[in-house]
Image (cartoon, rainbow over all chains, first blue to last red; front, top):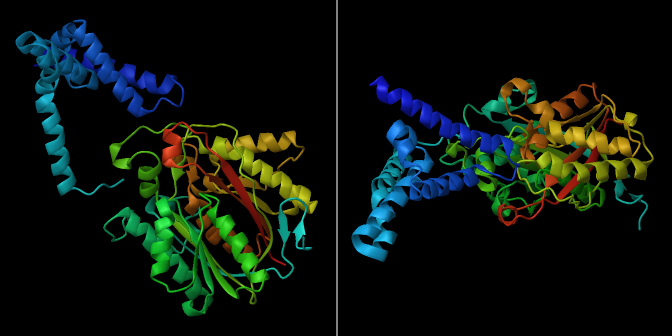
Length: 120
Length: 336
């Protein structure tokens, strides 16, 4: 088990460190939302270039759970979709691949909002 | 121009209205702060039995409006005007609170300068003979303000170290043409000033030039020096804004002494981890109606100048990259 956890911890931790440095060292006008979008976009670009795949192989969930992993899934799905069903597949493949993540976010978000009250 | 108007921007009341009473209510975090002994009510949690934070804020405002009247032993029906404002769109907290009271209502928006603005205007109504008793109030709620101006707090965004913490609190003063207590003696209404700050987390920096401008005009118009007052407090500049104002004033040869502070700095202790201090309409409202009024009534403070500080941007203008216009309104309250 530790053979998986330790690399995941290191890879995931390093990705988060990059995000934190982004927040701390950039101008104040860089907001958390900018970092969020930048991470998804970076994941798409790195995924498309095949540079994110090695991180996933080493770090597993440490690389797929952060937002850059979501970008990587979009890119990977789009490329597979393009191979299987051409241009339309390039559009549908990304969302198909990320469907589990998107649906889970909506359903659990909804359930949480039903059950809990925000405490602020 | 009548003789009540002095210098560029200042009004001197000839029959200064009395502050009959004040009332306030704060959230649990404020209730653990350094000024905890001066609040009338401290809520156990941020909802206080309501279903939404917006409802809570309207209820808080209603509580302080009736509270000040009850404290002074004045029937609510005998009050001529309510002057109140808050931070929410269309100032719903104030309108919804006034809905419950059946008294002519003047809604104000001066962002966080609203408390000073309402006291200045309330005093003018009384001085002009248009009213005998006026309730002046303002409120803010951490969670309603954050979700409107920045992000919902439950999203858990990291806050910048120079960001301030919107105060959950409402405060009111009951002004009257006769009675006992401290008096509202002068008011210096501010100009809108914008030095181009665009970061909505850095309100102190955005507001500092406007507040400094009002302070300079106040002292010039009245030919007074800072040592005239026992206490000079700005509304909610926070630690960074207060430092900036001191520097601006120094360049204008106004050296502020130990009697100069900021409600946002006073309301939380550094241990409470609010970063640069408190902010919001409620900040100066609860410090004025709580700490300051208490100290004046007990004789420890005799002359106080409050300069409410407001950032006049909207969430939309901020998202479109507009800079933040700001304003400072000053009122002096004296035991004379």
